[in-house]
Length: 242
Image (cartoon, rainbow, N blue to C red; front, side, top):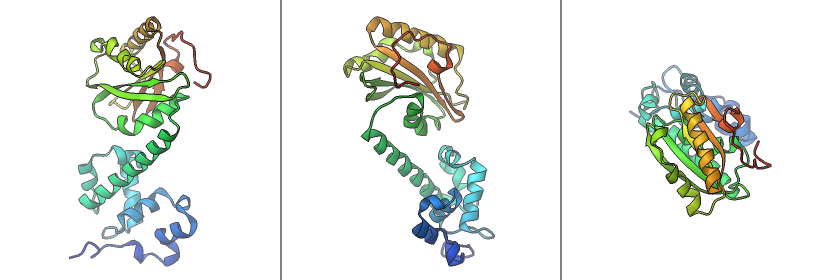
């Protein structure tokens, strides 16, 4: 039996309502998330067409970000999805992310905390383990290098400051931003996060390497400890950092 048997596909729509034809005529911006996802799915399941199945997926997982963070087996478990459609969804999201990386790479300048979130959140927000990253920047806030230093349960007391500052030293950077994630989903800094940031700022001052920020990324958003105001950075704030 073919995949289409018993299913309602996009070809069953009136021609004027078919998402694929509307995309060709009006452009992708005219389509809803559900219609775009429906084009990927191509066919629905008994009782639901492809767009309705797409809407169910978006509702079940809480939007496109939820589809990204969902495990492969969770997508497969939805009636009408299966391995092939789950792979299509994951592949489409990954392609969109890689395109955003290409755009970022063309102008690798980090001028505000949201830029860090845009660069790192796609991967970090979905992690179920903590990761600690260091971003090394030039005097013009160009990203010279990004490096992961720790993975697992990041106990700040065991993080060696020398390892963190080795990254900017090796690439002759003038400043760093430290980034880590909260798998709990809550981006608010803990007391340990704040103490660790204070130690970073002190060490950076001694080494003449600016610590511009410590960004925490989670599913519910992100937090800039600099903007949070609970730690005094006492370093020259870039004119573009806001």
